[in-house]
Image 1 (cartoon, rainbow, N blue to C red):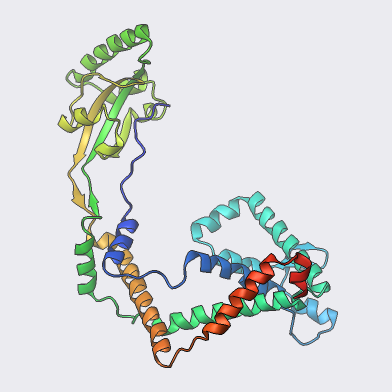
Image 2 (image 1 turned 60 degrees about the vertical axis):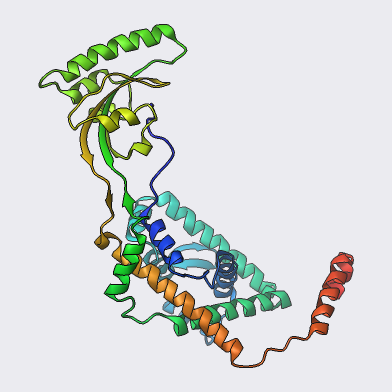
Length: 352
């Protein structure tokens, strides 16, 4: 397959919006990626491994109140309600794909059954009563409460941002929202490696003949491409590559395409792979992504920025509300004790 595109791509609109928010004064997220990842795992264990606290019921009553099982492994099961929760949390497109992918769905069910069986084994051994597990539960609970409460006290008002704020953010973002000129190009490709003189001579002769045919009045460039082009990627579409900026075309093509007019067919263009006969089907001038297309992304970015600033201010306010006292001697002692433990043998460290 002949590749005519290079690896550079235009920045996505989302990246431009986020950059604009940063330039506008956004601060770092109060919850970084590491915090989120360290939070999610204990939370999952907490939800799965917490001991049951429901009143004791007779086995028949328990079975009567349980939703229908979708999959079972011994005494553990994935019931209908659990599966529904998982499916409802998925985007509609992903949910539709999973419905058609029974192998993937079966794999998830088997993995969930294995996870539940493992949890039951751990509970049977009193694993949840280990001091380190209890500490992990407590730390996870504190993080969940902190995150939820801080979000509640720092949430931006429902009417923020106003239309004027959105418009101002859009004006700041315009340099990042610029769309370069787009060229719709079709090609006929004839392979000929540069080191093969005979192949180059033969391909050049064929290319010159095809150019004459393609430039003739009422010529059907698409039909010529379907019959003679050796590019499997574009031949079926009559050589059509689609709309692309110059930066995504090969260096040999850029100056040729830039000088062409709509409907014009080029002379043979030689690259390291062979010869290209190009036709410029259409041209779009450079532009800026319209406001309506990025308005919602701008709104989300500004609300996130506002909440981050409010969260930081709220935390600073808590610190400023009282007197912070730090015991330097106790702090140094803690570091010294940690250094001692790290150099002790594993058995001594566990004993301490």
